[in-house]
Image: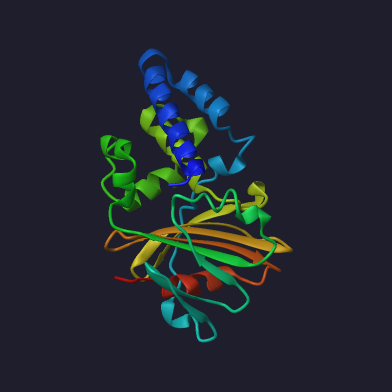
Length: 238
């Protein structure tokens, strides 16, 4: 694991230990202030207070076309995508969506796949908080808000949300929504702009496998329907 990744995980552990102390000797208000100073608040990082829309998007698969897509096969997964994009498989230990991608001027798609129960094994604290699968981890992460922190569980998922949310352009214009497409369901955070579109999609499957797609779309060529088309092509390789 890279030094940067170790540093981020170490910071998260220190934050959680400090949170336990604050919970024991302080109250929700002190806890919220601690998170605000350590990570940020809704004013400093607007995306932390964006939560999924109540409506669950359910596109019709038979109306989604991928006939002009290019197929990519990686060690852990395969995906098809429109022409004109560089497609890369990344590992979760690399914080590509916060560090490297800002330096890229090209249209690029990052994809990621992890197995059933991945987040439960990665974050042992999640088990203690009653999280039993990848989807529950995602649900609680994307619904977390720093201004609604009342206990250690709330604080933990705000910290996770600050790690999960990628560079999405102007955060004030970002939209977060739920979706269900075939056996895949999860959350999409996107920002449709004049020059560059950003899409970040975190999802699980009926077997609790985890997939992520992150897209920087220079020229703003893609729509939500195009994203759904890409999602339909995601597949695990044994």
